[in-house]
Image (cartoon, rainbow, N blue to C red; front, side, top):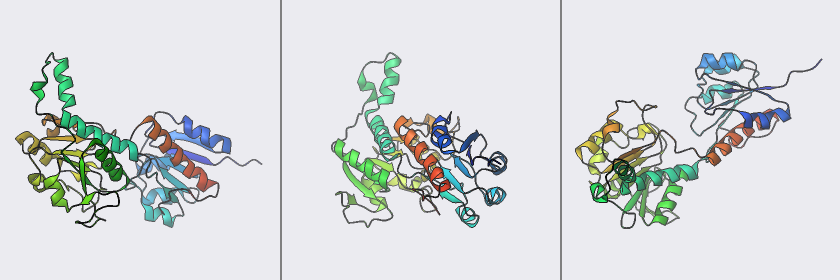
Length: 321
């Protein structure tokens, strides 16, 4: 009597195909299937009998782990955040949960720098003018530069450190704040640590790289914005709710600060009538900072390898429980 091959279900995937996952799994004897649907009941239906699950946006409640027990052994998230996965329930039902930290450090910090420079140099506005037949660059003055300006990093994890390193290389004076750092000190890299209000009041570019939690929800609100320089630029490649986007749009429209470069929003996709869309001097991208062709391959490979490792009896690289 033959035994069926272990099944790996891909549930609510962020990618158009799953050939890479099949190439990794099938030669090792794992069957792979891919299914849409992020809600718990959809996952239960689509992953019934699966030993492992790879997911981008699936919602894994206690009900999911109970329904798929005891066959399910591992859930691997193609990303860093895991707020949609009940880690405690997974642990109780013997399911290892993994994520992929660090895969996008370089590309997210690249994107943050690009947003900052696009705002300072008004590249998107100049491009629009040129296409409309407006040649003189004077119509988009003032134009800024890196040298002589201060780049404030909020959150000094790996991405924040990468952004600080790149900003320094461009000629910015870099200052920072992080919950784990003491104001008045200097980081090993040589960046001055300020208190949060000091960063808001002294930085020309305020680049957000902190995690979203109760303490950082609307960290940049109307009060914080009131401390900023009139020429300040806010850049957010962290989480949308770190910024009170309505307050930011209002400040931009009223000319209280200069500009903003945003890749993440409190509700995604961004509502078509959101005030930030009509705010001046803004550069908006659709939660794309994490993606490059290189980072995408790394992300998928590491997420898939975690499932393989657990099912073959090895310790995965980044277990959360």
